[in-house]
Amino acid sequence: METNLTGFALLEDPKHNRGTAFSREKRQEKHLIGLLPPAVETLENQVKRCLFQLSKKNNDLEQYIYLAQLADDNQTLFYAVLATDPERFLKIVYDPTVGTACLEFGHIYRKPKGMYVSMEQKGKLREVLKNWPVEDVRVICVSTGGRILGLGDLGTNGMGIPIGKLQLYTACAAVQPDVLLPVLLDCGTDNEKLLGDPLYLGLKQKRPSTDELDAFVQEFVDAVQERFPKCCIHFEDWKGTDAIRLLARYVNQISCYNDDIQGTGSVTVAGLYNALKISKSSLKDQRVLFLGAGSAGIGIANMIASAMKLEGLSEKDARARISLFDVNGLLEPSRKDLSPDQQPYAHTAKPAKDLVAAINELKPTILIGVSTVGGTFTKQVIEAMSKLNDRPVIFALSNPTEHAECTAEEAYKFSKGNAIFAAGVQFDRVTIDGKSYEPSQANNFYIFPAVGMAIVATEAKHVPDEIFITAARATADQVTDEQLAKGMLFPPQTDVQKASHVTAVKSAERIFELNLARVEKPKSIDKLITSLEYKPIYEG
Ligand SMILES: NC(=O)C1=CN([C@@H]2O[C@H](COP(=O)(O)OP(=O)(O)OC[C@H]3O[C@@H](n4cnc5c(N)ncnc54)[C@H](OP(=O)(O)O)[C@@H]3O)[C@@H](O)[C@H]2O)C=CC1
Ligand SMILES: CC(=O)C(=O)O
Ligand SMILES: [Mg+2]
Image (cartoon, rainbow, N blue to C red; front, side):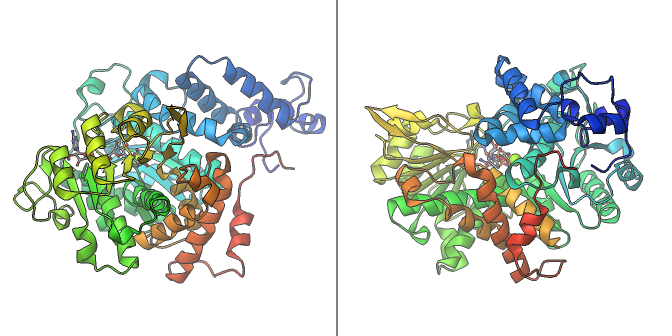
């Protein structure tokens, strides 16, 4: 244990605090005698107490608050508790409960975590970043709170997302927590409810123009490069148009990626690889229709097109197999509101405002929801997909739960059990007429922690889509035939650390192949990753 802290200062430092697990010798050495109850406990016993206390909480948000406080008190114990049951705790510290926590952020706030970098500090960001006490930050997860899950603009309340995402780097892929920094880039909010809330913690002003935002982001990017030269910037939950524009600007310039675009593209392709093993067909033969054409929709579409190209299609032919439908209807050439990223998917077709009509016209084999709007995959939509396909692939990816385009139960019921279904959240198993169905969770948490570990291990200078295609294949290939037979498209969440390790190793190999690493290639990438992995135990 390396720290000069003693007494209460030590007990208040989450990295070094062990609470009742401080040995008698350490209590003596660190001036803790009298500051703790006499029992000297093991970490296992402390975990038991936490689980008991969690069992007394009345709802998921209360569990979230309890765990947030635990993370502030004792980092080791926090990650040890999460490790007891990743499947149970992923939905508490992350999606969907983190959505409720973000809605309530100003109300449940206790203690600062990470950094709040606001437009008030424009021109001084280099100075601001110096206030962070850790010198070697390797990943910053940064949001403007512009589009938090499917909940819209939540301004500074969005801070729950960078915090939760980075906790998953550690909980899923064992990245050392010290090298991770959540940042909320506060550029105001257009959310009137928050602007009128006396407990709102962000800047009470409207969002700036695109030019002003971009200049602020540029200053932030420059300040990060200077203060943390080995740091990768993970963009998360920005307004869709900002997300796409800024990724295009920085992806070949600095170490950065956008999880909603690239991570979501990757996890969806992983799910499709396995869905198509079940339906015994190949990706290049599919026709894909999206509901939603924002950052996730375009990100997934581009990733599917890249994966189709690997199966021999040209870029043009791959894109011809993909169509998108948004709030204004089908994307087609007569639409005057399309962005340059949407235009390649605007194929000649009859204009359509009705999703069922578009399905009947385009005859998709795969339907993907990234619209942010719950219930949009109606009975008629699912029935239309089922009439056209023996095994329609239906992914309702919008978060959190109420925003999913359909529930698992609806997907199975309206398709008579034939849908190959995944959602952004984990729905419970469904039983219809005595037959049980296992819905999958297509959520980027299978990808970003593992890719994050690969980036940390290799000090990757850029993070292009190729790495995410590799991560998709690595994740998909870990699902066994037996699991596929149950309809599982992803590795079991109980094994998420094992799965993330394998995906991290493969992603790191790809980073070396692409000459993007800033470290020398080791003899064993597997051993390199293992050597970096954080373990929630008290050492020394
Ligand atoms: N499962 C996962 O791992 C992930 C899930 N997501 C989820 O995907 C959703 C979308 O994210 P993202 O693409 O970044 O968000 P964006 O805001 O960028 O895009 C939303 C898209 O949906 C369209 N849309 C809005 N309302 C409707 C409607 N009623 N019918 C059809 N289309 C509609 C919007 O059109 P317009 O722009 O014209 O309003 C836009 O094209 C979110 O709910 C998010 O939680 C995102 C990342 C990962
Ligand atoms: C999961 C995720 O990144 C999202 O819903 O935005
Ligand atoms: Mg996101």
